[in-house]
Image (cartoon, rainbow, N blue to C red):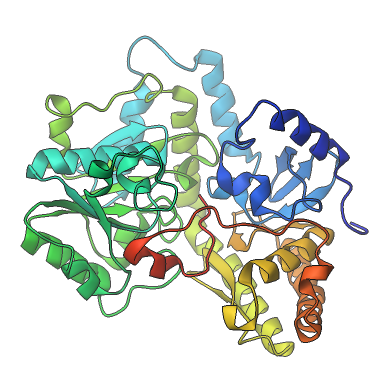
Amino acid sequence: MNGYPKIDESNKLYERASKIMFPVTQTMAKGPSQYVNGVAPKYIKKAKGAHVWDVDGNEYIDFNMGIGPISLGYGYKVVDDAIVAQLKDGITFSLMHPLEVELSELIHKIIPNAEGIRIAKTGAEVCSAAVRASRAFTGRSKVVCCGYHGWHDWYIGTTSRAEGIPQEVRELTSTFVYNDLESLKSKLDEDVACVILEPFIFEAPKNDFLKEVQRLCKENGSLLIFDEMWTGFRVAIGGAQEYFGVTPDLAVYSKAFANGMPIALLTGRKDVLQHFEKDVFFYSTFGGEALSMAAAVATINEMISKNVPQALAKIGKQLKDGYNALAAKYELSTVTTCSGFDCRTIITFNASAGDPLIMKSFVQQEMIKRGILWGGFHNVCFTHTQEDIENTLKAYDEVLPLLAEGLKKNELVSLLKGKPVEAVFRPVGAVQKVFKDKVVAK
């Protein structure tokens, strides 16, 4: 790509949407506030492998991967063939479909805690179902959480976007700090039904943190829930619970295991999930939608046969190590770092060097100019090629010295060609320490 992309068609669509859609995006992490408005494209028309094309015809290497669901790559033949084959027989039916049994048996084999399985459509709803089941099983009301768990009342009341949620509901959920057992202990009492956390976001667990959380939950009579939306099927086929050897009472999954089709899972102890048979209501018309289940079976089997987690780690490590080497080359190691588990890494900017969002915006702007659709993350997929990695590192090699020069001259703001990116929302309470200056991307 020569120069900043022409985005006339994107802007025309955005103008039309702005008149009738509030906001214009269905997923905040995909919306204009997460990109330099005026430089970045706003609408993608098609995708293949690890590349996407916007509505103006510009091509980019993508490191957002649909904000997580694209684990194998866009238009992956094995998965698309499974979808097309199922489409010939139908999508949604008046009775149950055999794929519900096939998928559940497959999950039972590969996920350690999957004595029981529920199939749903979105991550937020299985998180809420897990919380509801925990309350029913324990007879308790409170929830303690760490991470991001969707848009439903019980969780989003802990953030700055809590308008519309009754105070009584907000008071039932509290937060704790990752890798800080004392912060969890301070929240546990006899009315805590469950502790729900992401097994890791980017920081690794220290000093057997997950095992210690499990121990505290057991001692307190609270259920432990792993939110594995990001970790599931990426760090290992069986997710973080397989990788770390810690089996939670319940776990929830979405994103990676159907390569872009909308589906989610709740797995866990049989004695807990049996409450859904009579006492707890959790059903939806599209829970057994067959195209997504066909995609899930095909994706998981491909992940197993191709050892996709190992491949993701290899790709991600090249990017992480390459970025950090370039940051050192341009004397920016104290300014910017790429960190996280190799399958999914984040680039952060040190607030002591300047406004992190301004630095992120500048790097994003210049990466887009070089044909990289970049949001501060390396969400890698199986079909990112060696050429993709080399081109990305070449772009970093051009952009990081520009960042260093802009910081030295204190002119980054004036170098921006549009409105800088914004945070999705601000966590409040103890969880604020977890996210620090990072942007929540869900």
